[in-house]
Image: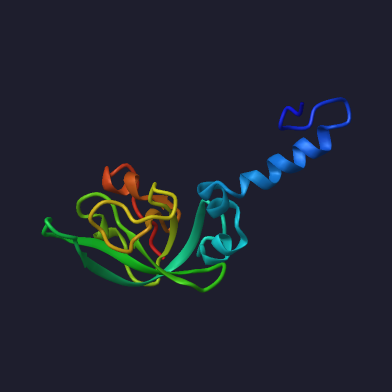
Length: 145
């Protein structure tokens, strides 16, 4: 007799509300849209954030790799949280000094660490307003302050 789901001209609200409730049963949707996930994210939902370099650090790669990955500790300007950010490309750590202003973006796995670098979820994009890749390719020079 019944079809299982509401039908008819007056069923739109019921169907819409049911779909809204069922979305929260999906693990990925719930994780992405929950308030606690946004609170835990140091970037607070933004794609990029500016910060000040606190120190330059080397992080050991996970097994079976053996390397020291060049990273920096950055204190975000927007909320004061300290995070570790990877410095890409060979020798780019030389362009970054302490107390430099850097632009940080995600590392590409939506909040997870990438590859063999444990606990590093962000990467450096710009230093003192100049793109790190431009410095690496010698297209631009870092402004002297």
